[in-house]
Amino acid sequence: MPLADLGPTRDVEGSAGRSAEVSIPMEADTQRVLLVDDQCDEPLLFNLRDAGFDAVAESTAEGALRSATTLNPDVILLDVMLPDVSGIETCRRIRSDPATSDIAVLLLSARADEFDRLLGFEAGADDYVVKPFSVREVVMRVRALARRVRDLKQARQAPRPGRFLSWRGLSVDVGRQQVFIDGQESTLRPLEYKLLALIVEHPEKTFSRAALLEEIWGITGEVQTRTVDTHVRRLRERLGPYEDAIETVYGLGYRLRTPG
Image (cartoon, rainbow, N blue to C red):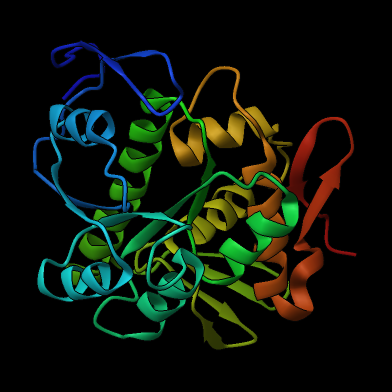
């Protein structure tokens, strides 16, 4: 559906402590989102449903793990501070179970330090949002994650003929959305794959952080850019001997390094 075909707009009180006007285009197919928070954010839950998602809620880590298995959501919004087990540990458990490892996880936390963000990403989170947050921004981030999950499922179910992008011993199969390092498949999260494929496919282009936020996360406007930096750092770690493939252009952003 074109972006101009917007769904209804509501003014509600969000977790940012102010009115959050949300007008988000609907997807043709409904995807499920699981919100895990011991103090359920009703405005956020309402806006997720208003955006076209089948949104359900749990209040504990135990409930989150159970629903992750039984409901098979596309995206989990996971509060870091839960009454039984931390959201960080819950994320690790979701990632370690083959039945739930492909679910996208967005962590919600009041902690904004880079160390806390890195802990979240190292546990396997796809995104990290700091409270208080804009409801609109969170819904947009969820939409981007859900789209990545859907695209990955479609690529696996109906693989297209391979189209390969390469950089030294690093190879990206665009059709099957797979990455190989010296011939061995490397498991990347959907957003990590998208980030790598975008940069490798445009070797002459320098991407600003704002451009990457818009292209990968579907977010525009004045928002924090630490998410991009942290994902690039994590992606470099996963690329092992080819971590230098992504070059930092200071003051501008990131680009594919020219092979030397």
